[in-house]
Image (cartoon, rainbow, N blue to C red; front, side):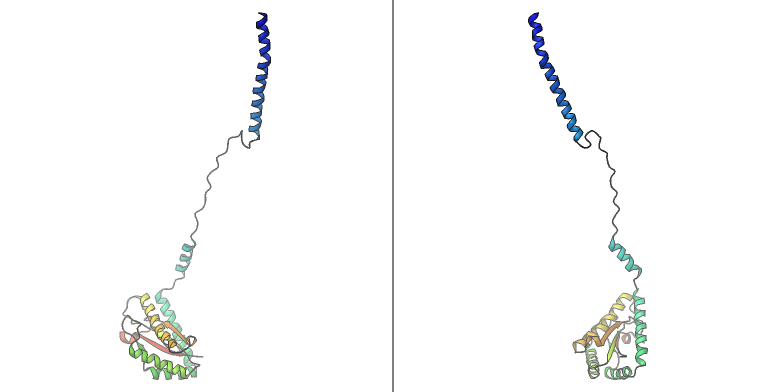
Length: 211
């Protein structure tokens, strides 16, 4: 019995030491966990962020453009109104009237075109050369080239574009023959000023402007 009691007494310090070591390790682990942010607290689940759908700037611009768009018919009316105003102003200017008389005599009538084309005819080329000769003799003169189409074409956008092309063809030809671009303006009025026949309506007129 004595030896058994003595062995038990020897094991008690080792048991105490082991328990102490376990306690120290547990306390150390708890201390480390306390230092970790949110280590002992459940993490909150944040609600998903709602991002508004982007607004298309192109769609906004198209909407604004559509709100201010001018129809071909209105554009032709506005152009014809401008021509009427320019003609009234020129009629009150003696120099413009004199230039117009020389232009009318040299041209012998409007520059005529075939159906659905802005191509100058050989005689049209001759008329443009005569216009250039008049303007060379009068360096201060300025002119407005007015393009028109026949009324039987039932396509307002095409009519407006074709009338502009006819006016621009004559204006560009004049510039190629030496007339400064600043002395020539071109405008298309579609079929807003028709003549008695379709052939007579497919034309370009040249109007002297007041200085």
